[in-house]
Image (cartoon, rainbow, N blue to C red):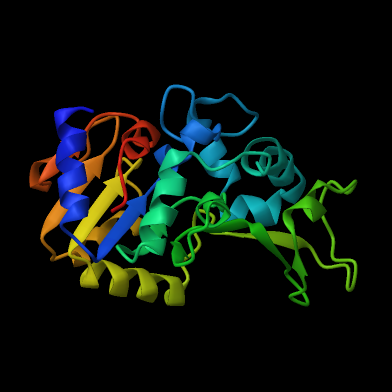
Amino acid sequence: MSRETEELQKIIDGHKRIVFFGGAGVSTESGIPDFRSQDGLYNMKYKYPPELIISHSFFMAQPEEFYRFYRDRILITDVEPNPAHRKLAELERAGKLLAVVTQNIDGLHQKAGSRTVYELHGSIHRNYCTRCGKFFGPEYLRGPEAIPKCDECGGTVKPDVVLYEEGLDDATISGAVRAISEADCLIIGGTSLVVYPAAGLIDYFSGDKLVLINKSATTRDESADLVIREPIGEVFSKIEVR
């Protein structure tokens, strides 16, 4: 165990109101690509830039092209939680973790057993008819239609994920802010902290210890009590819950 991981163990042992704030880097060890790394979605070559495809205006104007990309690169369901997801769920069961606040849409925290999860950018596991509101699971989007349609009213089915140009859910934001403001320790992991307004939520933290676990530098490193540059799954695999 590295010196930094030993320090993280001491911090976790000494706090009982921990909140975890995570991004795409939490799920890369489960096989889900991130956005901004060399192999991330934003560096892949498509007919249109990926950041344009996953915008509200593009979804409305070219839904067939949107769904071609979405099914190919976003709708990933055949993956399993990694040690980071599982350890966070264990910390919650032990009464040490108040909540997970995540920018991810893969549902892996819940699959690992976490119960209090604020999904800032929605979830691929929730899909709704834009006309009548009927709910559909993720597999419905893999149907034969180029643009999935509601089997009740024929309306277009849209993933409950926050696209560019769309606002975050007010109730989710309120819950995340409340959890972060009540935390005595905030662990930030797997995020470059460049996506707003999500990254701005950590400004509500006024607790004792701020920990950053990310393979690359972030704008908040200087204000952190502990910075770890190792893969987050490897770090959490060495942590004991006691």
